[in-house]
Every structure is written in structure tokens, then in C-alpha cells.
Amino acid sequence: MDNVRGSRHNVREVETIMLQPLPEIAESIDDVICHELSMWPEDANDLLLIVEAISRGDLKWVLVACAKAVSENNLLLARWCMGELRGMVSISGAPIQRLGAYMLEGLVARLAASGSSIYKSLQSREPESYEFLSYVYVLHEVCPYFKFGYMSANGAIAEAMKDEERIHIIDFQIGQGSQWISLIQAFAARPGGAPNIRITGIGDVSVLVTVKRRLEKLARKFDVSFKFNAISRPSYEVEVANLDVREGEALGVNFAYMLHHLPDESVSMENHRDRLLRMVKSLSPKVVTLVEQECNTNTSPFLPRFFETLSYYTAMFESIDVMLPRNHKERISIEQHCLARDVVNIIACEGAERIERHELLGKWKSRFSMAGFEPYPLSSIISATIRALLRDYSNGYGIEEKDGALYLGWMDRILVSSCAWK
Image (tube, rainbow, N blue to C red; front, side, top):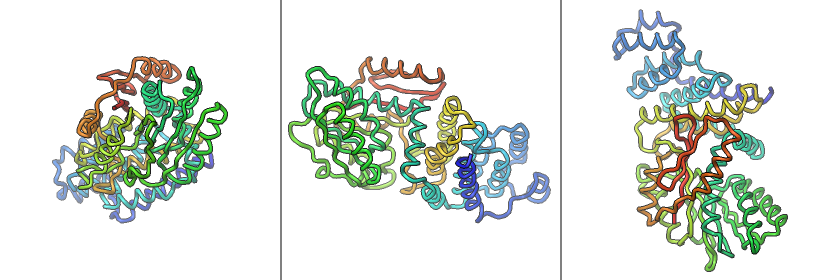
């Protein structure tokens, strides 16, 4: 319970910081109607609709109304909605209440023009690396989104490399490196013996040390010739010279949940997103895997982006609720450290400060094609394996195959897409 109390204190503390610049909110609906109605640019009927939504507890409706007021710079209405929303959201409540708490943080930060500072406040509250990794591990276990991506990417790499004796894999956001455990084991069981494997991992220096040690230990256990090359720099700064690509090695490149962090032409003339794809293509890889959230938040204006974020993360929070009981002592910490910061960044930040810039697979296909890649269709064996995996989870999850790509969804919302290129 201490972890839960600590997380609740952190969130409330951040909320307090965000509200400091704002004038005092009217104490009651009557105060607003009697004294301030003449200042409302909205029709009185719109106000009544919001009051009715509040009375029936329609949190989504009120969140959208608040976002609309923020987008129109209707400060009085926005601040009043925020005051009402504070009584409707809860980081320990139902899925929409928990998501609503973080979306409200984003709205307050945006209205106060402090999105960057709030985002940095959330960053500064990150736990130590080992603690954060424990939260990520639990999230990986209770939700199949990561396993779906890793298994589909590994399947494509294994298939492309089935006859290769020397393999080099470049992972542009290696994280904990857990994706490569099953692939090393699969290569170890290959008839005729395992190939020589080299993995280049790009990530935080404190995590890379742990990943290197972990994978080397695994490779020794399975008698696999293995080397790990660590690159501790942002992915957009990586150049060909850093990657140590060698002649005679079959090259595989993995982009798992990372390309959406790179700015594109809408943010910077450098367009790191397309530049990185062109650089990778110049290395003549045998296969390149892409796993991304199926969400459209890159170039969308604020209000459509808010709608998309509400739809996407509602499905994600609902799926977590099914697999992780609300009384789970780490659930609040998991959502706060693994999801909340992204939600706040999407809603509150603009320009270079907004790093959560998701695109739909159709747009990624255009980028890969323009960089010179061709599709590498995922085999039916991969989809069958993932369908078997989903039996261990709620039947609310579903998988769809379309045009050589795989999609994982919750109920009627597609959440993750996976595909491969050559």
C-alpha cells in the first residue's frame, strides 16, 4: 500500500503544481451562471448540456467539452470544467476515471502553457532504473501488446535468417532486451547448430550494461557464439560508423515502438524519421521489422488528437483493468510511469517538445516505400503462434491479418501493428 500512497501523492503533487498559475475556480454552478454568464462565448444550451453530463457522471463527455473549450481558448469554461472534472477522476477508480486523471493533467498543463514543465516533472519522478523495469515487466506480463510485437518481429527475423551462419541484429530501442531471449533460444535449437550472433543495442547506458550481461549469460547457457555492442546515444544521432556493419553478416534491423519518437518534416527540416530509414536502407538489410501503436497523433490538430488519445488509451486502460485487479499494489505506479507521461505529452505539448507522435501503418508504409524498402509479408505461422499466445489472455483481444501485416486489438479498437520490410 505504501507504493500506492506514494504514487497518489506524486500525482496530486503534480496536479497542485499545474493549478498554481490558474485563477480561483468558481465554487458552484450557480456562481458561474449568475455572475459570469455574460462572459461565456458558448450558447447557454451548451452549458446546460455540460451540466447534464456532469449530473449523470458522463466523464468522457465532460473531458471532450473541456478539451473543446481549451482549443477555443474559452478560459472561463475550460477552468470551470477542470474544477468539475477534479471531482470525477481518480487514479484508483474505473479505467476511464484513471485515464481521465492523466488527460486532465494534460489539459491543465496545456491551458497554463506549461506542458513542457509538467512533462519534465513527470520525467523527474521516474523511479530508479531497476524499479522502472519492474513496472515495465509487469505491464509486459499482463498485456500482450509487447509480446505480440516481439514475437511477430522475431518470427520475421528468424524466417529471413534461417539459412544464415553469421547474423547481426540492430535494435534501435533495446529496452530490457527481453525480445532477444526467445530468438537466441530458437537459433540455439536450429538443426546443424546455432549461427554466430551479434546484437547492437541502442539505449540508456545504465540499462545497456544489464542487457549485455543478461544476454551474454543466456548465450553461454545455450552454447551460442554471441557478442553485444552497446550504443548509448539517442537513436537520431546514430550514424553508420557507430553500427559496425560487417561484410558477410546477414543484417536485421528492429524498430519496436521507437520510430514515433523521432521528429519528422512537420517538426524539423532535418526529418530524422525519414533520414534514419534511408540510412538503414543503405546498409542493405535482409529484413527490417516495424512494431508501432496504431494511433494517429503526429500532425493532427489538438482537438482531433485529443479525441484519438481518448479513444486509444481508453481501450488500453480497459484491457489493463481486465488483467490487473484494481487493488494490485503496483497498478497505479505501472500506469503512472509507463502510460501517464505519454498521455500528458500528447495533449499538453507541441512542436519539438511533443515526442509522442504516432502514425497509422498506412503512413509508415509510405515512409518505408519512399526510403526504397519493399514489403516482407509475415507468414501465417507467425499469426498462428500469436493466436495461441492470446489464449492466455482475455478473449477481448483479437488479431487480424491484412496485406502482409498483423494487427492486435482490444474489442473494436486496433492498438498495435506489426510488419516487416526488405
